[in-house]
Amino acid sequence: MKLGDNIQTADWKKEKHAPVIEAPETVKAGEPFMVKLSIGKEIPHPNTTAHHIAWMELYFKPEGDKFIYQIGHFEFAAHGASVQGADSGPVWTHPVANCSVTVNGPGTLVATSYCNIHGLWENSHEVKVG
Image (tube, rainbow, N blue to C red; front, top):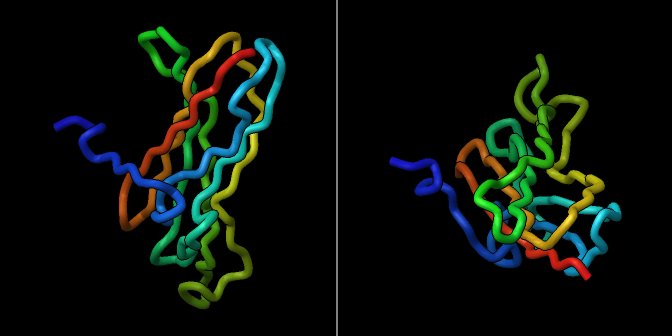
């Protein structure tokens, strides 16, 4: 078994678990640009104690490179749990993360997300340098 065999993909416009990557299609080498990751942009994902997105990760795979590089890990720990019971807590985190990224050449941003019930999901976004 390979981990990759268990990662699911889908169009985020039709599947609430697939990570959404919002970033420019073309960037300038060596200049920062913003990347926004989210879950549930078109179809809301539940955010309850029993069913939630626990984390997302962002990677960059440079064009022609053998390796992928981790950019960030974003954990969402509050899902309404409290001593009073599930979904009665005072705080919820939402699966949205922003980060500033600089690349030296073209490649692909890859995002993964983990739903505590439906497992690992993946999406990608190509970045050109112009």
